Length: 435
Image (cartoon, rainbow, N blue to C red):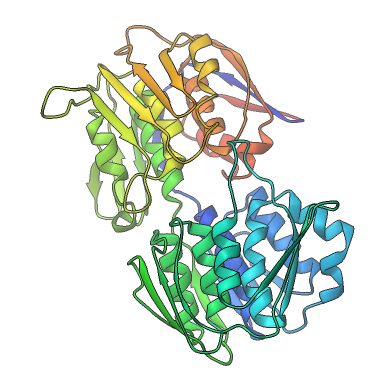
């Protein structure tokens, strides 16, 4: 199992460009199943989760042509339904949470779908009810084989309907939208997720001939069409990577410029860092984070200390709370980190406490951070990455610590960050990958 050996204490400086958005990529890759014509996708991140999703598409017969490291053309003109029940396909789909988004397009296209109960990050229970309730409303039948842990979905015909989602699930919304674009009649989805990634998926589908209105709101209206055509699509920069680099720039940077960030799609992320006292300078479509000797956390107007909590878009994405927590350890002041959506995502703070961070873990969802104001440096440690976002947060902590740290299970980091050690070493970090 590969590990990172990190020599901390090196300041980062220079320019870095974010990769394509992982979460968008997993959605639009599944959407290529909705047409027999070629679909070109550019700015694909070269990361484990995306490459595994592409491998799943290949297994079911999708022709994949590599145009370059970050560009592929997909053509699903012949889908091999027999592969769906093979052990190899089911095992691979079970290792990737994004595989669940194959259900909507496969159901719309061929009337059947089958995937293993998907895995992913170790961040607590992540239910799939929203996906399946929406699919059932469209006319799908869901059966779960508890022995094989396989989800079987079928439909003789999909018909549009009105539905009110029980939660604004991003992947659930994407799955339902992909099923509805080829359903008969009109589908109205209320309480739909409206993240930029869902917007990008809907815009891509409309270029393919779908009829989706309300994009960017929580009320989507979809008039089904008989077929879709091919298109070309470019994936947005990954907002989570942008947010991670802002945090690095504040905590261990000596002046970092983040290029081509698609600033208008970052939402509340830059202002959230500003509430921690961090200067984030907007220059065109770039961000610059100058060196910070100190940064002070704001308080609310009534004098109570700051709370950072995740929320559906346009609220703060939960994927950045781990990084914000680490960055807060060197701020001046106190902040409450409230992780509402996942029940195990804050447990990695035990390692930060061992490194000398002053953190009180109140319960599985809340942690109070008392900042060191750069007066106490974190200690090096040996750690294990439990999930993608905690992994990058631990990497930032290790880079700030004086001494040598080791992070194991970095396959979790590789799932979401492309060649992260090489890109950070180019800024001045000292990170060695040990296979």
